[in-house]
Length: 230
Image 1: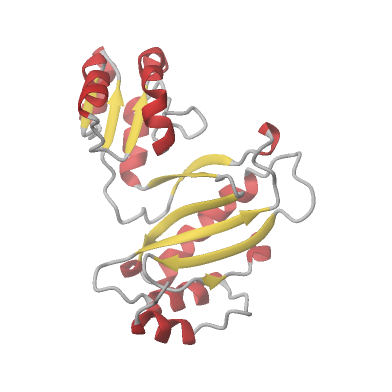
Image 2 (image 1 turned 90 degrees about the vertical axis):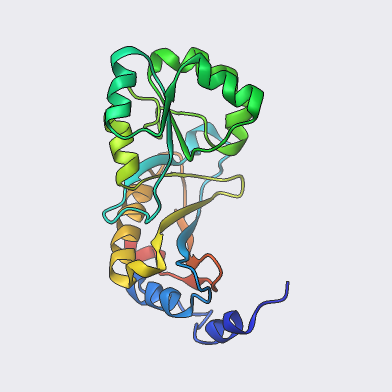
């Protein structure tokens, strides 16, 4: 894969053998972000667990202190008073079977997060094959199946992120925008790492945090000393 001149120049400023402190690493990420747009900064954490085993899953959600810099579009499955509460809390789309049909018939995905009340999961379950692969299926662990949908919507709008392992035992999660600057990004990263460490499965043996890298959308990765978060 060929890289642009800005990327190569940025990569030269980073010592790939060094494990940086969070603020220093994020300072380098901000400095070497090559794009003209406000890039998203992502954290990539490889864990010493085996995601194939149910007792070694790591998944949850946290409201980042400074949000993500992105306005999330929220679809809520609820009825009656709960639907009204979701609308009042700022949900972008609210409905029941009408939303299920819209997704099934129109292949509609103009939203970033799906929330549902527990009593609506029977209806939402019909969309499992469609929402599941896109990581949009509501789940109690992520706080997106909730009796209090208004609170769930408010938290998502405030900058709540979901973290979960992929098949290679890595968590990929946004922690803000380049424009936040190193300090705010480091505070967001510290909050997220704290949640990941807290979620350590009892069945996990050996070194829990294997590696920790931060990078902007188009920029080079910077290694962070993950041991400092344990």
